Structures are given as structure tokens and as C-alpha cells.
Amino acid sequence: MIHEACGRFERGEGLTDAPMVRVGVGSGRDRVVSTSAVVDIGADVCAFPSELFPWALSGVRSGAILVQDVWGDSRPAIVYYPAITVGTIRVNGVASVVSAGVEALLGRSFLNRVEVRLSAPRNLVLLRATGRSGHAETT
Image (cartoon, rainbow, N blue to C red; front, side, top):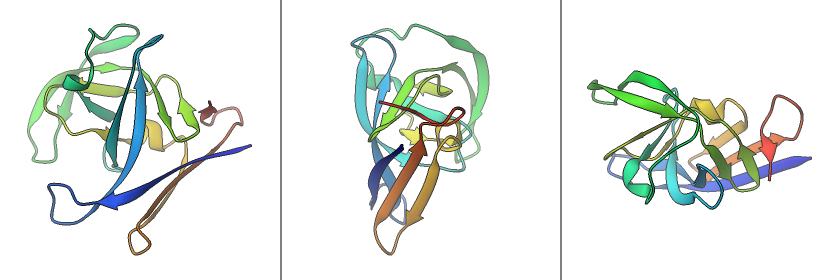
């Protein structure tokens, strides 16, 4: 079975439009937030601003890692492993940094599990996954 999610290129703070999709980030039962995120194939992991979460994050997490932003500044961050849903695609245990003031990014920790199609001239962002083992789980 094929599952998909669609997004669009939107004007952000940069010089050009960015590919964006709407995502749900879950960190436990009844603890899901929704936000728009940039589809960023250059980011190793997903990133979400801590301001999105009205509760203390819990669950599986790893120790601190060093995260470098687009300007080259580095800072330590804790990696969490929430479930991420985009359209009808759901992936559990996605490495994600949650930190104050960061831009929401859908990085390769999620994107490497799905097929990604970007077409700026058509204003199209398409993510596709199958339910096969080793690929994205479905909702």
C-alpha cells in the first residue's frame, strides 16, 4: 500500500521559497503537536522548537550531541525519538532535536525512510512511502 503527503513551496525568511509540509510530532499518548516544517535534505536529523511542546518531553532520548546550524554555530542538544506523521505517512522513533528558537525541519532521519519529490516550478512537495518492512509505518 502506498501512503503519501503533499506540501508546497512557501516564502520564509530566506531569499527563495522553501519546500514545506505539515507534520505531527508525537511524544506519547495524547501528546501530539502540529507545525509546518521545511523539507531539508541537508539536515541530518529533524528539528523542532521546544516552544511547540506545552509539556515536558519524556520518553526515549539519547545523550547530548553537537548540532551545527546553517550559519556554522554549534551547540549541544538532546536527541529525542518521537513519532512523526506527514499526511498518511507515520514513522516511529525519528531522531529529532528539540531546542528553543530552532526552525522546524524535516531532516534525513525522516526523509531517508520515504521517497521525496520536489518540483518548485509546479509548487509541489510529494512524500511517498510503502508499508513494507524497513520503510515508513503507516497510520
